[in-house]
Length: 282
Image (cartoon, rainbow, N blue to C red):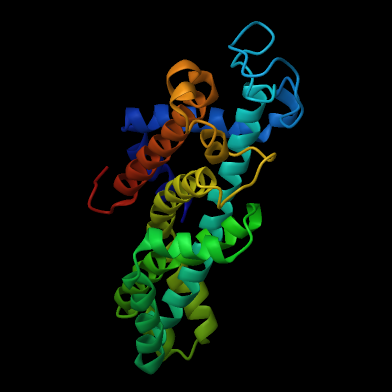
């Protein structure tokens, strides 16, 4: 993508005021999570106050059931959840792009084999597939990353394959084939750059979904395990009615942060989709 094309996309993106606010909010949340070791006032794993103490000047978001600072745990939890979302998105996108390129370009029995396997994976209920995989493997940070990475690739594969089938019939690809250019060059220098934009937009939805999945699995005890904080296992402590009604600082901040992250990512993704759409003029 040249500089003029990038400038045009940014111009279209800037028309979405809600997306701009979401992007700023997302940058702030990601920055706070990345800088957690610097900005967190306490260790996220060591008790520093009374048990389940309400917010005060020493602990702005109170403490949890064993006296750990909730603000510090929230910052580190956001870091873990964002890492899970990002790495799972990278893994699933990489798998989906490679399979989609191969399937769409070569066609024939290779295409049938890849798409049959893709359809088989997509035929399983998504949440059931995730839960079964999480139950089989030992719970932990990298287990959940690999599980989410390996269950989210079919959508990317189908998207890339569709784009490749369309691009394969364009004049510039046909001219490269007629000129005897290597398949590697055609795939990675001609076709792949023209699939980056739609894949990037789709990846934002995978990113948001992975954060939600991590939160759900950790809440159920199948994801990131304590004492390592994640947004899901922080919410795990809110299973009693007493905590839900009388101690909202133990769960509300984590729930609000999940909502803000997912909504911000989805709004930015929607704006990117509109900005990249060639049907938008000017």
